Image (cartoon, rainbow, N blue to C red; front, side, top):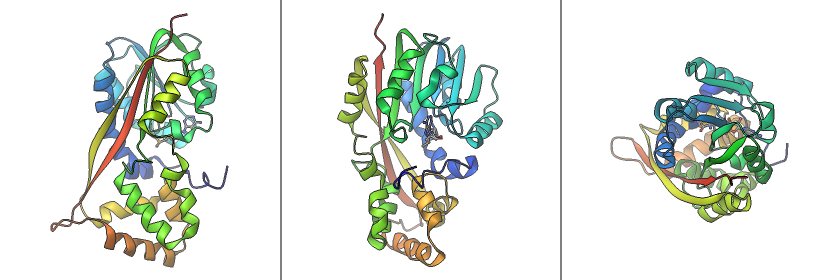
Length: 272
Ligand SMILES: C[S@@+](CC[C@H](N)C(=O)[O-])C[C@H]1O[C@@H](n2cnc3c(N)ncnc32)[C@H](O)[C@@H]1O
């Protein structure tokens, strides 16, 4: 674990859902609409977390089968408990060892939602995806637009944190993941040898009911920003809370209307 990854905590499914799952659930169907796959295919999902994209694949993609892997045993347990469907198999696994979970050349569609930036060797992850892909298969993924300030609720958090704590400046996702741009993601797919590479922005509203609805998920410790927040002593956490309360755009009814943008990419595996 490096200094900047030390808060990447993926231990509690409920905490993850409160912080991020509720938003990834909104991105997933939009991504699948754009991917436009036929029914009855064999899918594979890398980094399924608590199953936001898995549930959408089963409902919308109408697959013949779906294998969804994640290294977090807690997330896999949560996904199994909340997505009960005979077509899906949730397994503990790693993006850099996909052939442990699927045979070579066995899947028609391989997807990853909000995952690739957390994998240090992204080129190798895409090579692994291609190993389990049938010729002509589709590979699709999406990441938040961190460098473009596209995830407003995170950007507000890190701006406030960095103003109070110089040590937070290197932890912000825009600095850690500068490649999460439209061009950066397209270059990754083209560099991996995918054909017909296409990209699209997916934008969703992230409306927080009130300040507590915004703040509480950061205190639960799941994900980089909540992991950092949970590491602060009570006084420092209170200072951050008050700085955020003062800086967020708040409507008269107390709601905090923000936006989030992801970049989605798809490409075709070359026929051998
Ligand atoms: C932001 S979450 C996204 C989860 C889910 N796909 C979603 O959309 O809600 C990032 C996920 O990447 C997973 N992850 C981190 N490193 C991984 C790796 N080497 N291989 C596969 N998944 C990984 C984490 O366990 C976590 O579930």
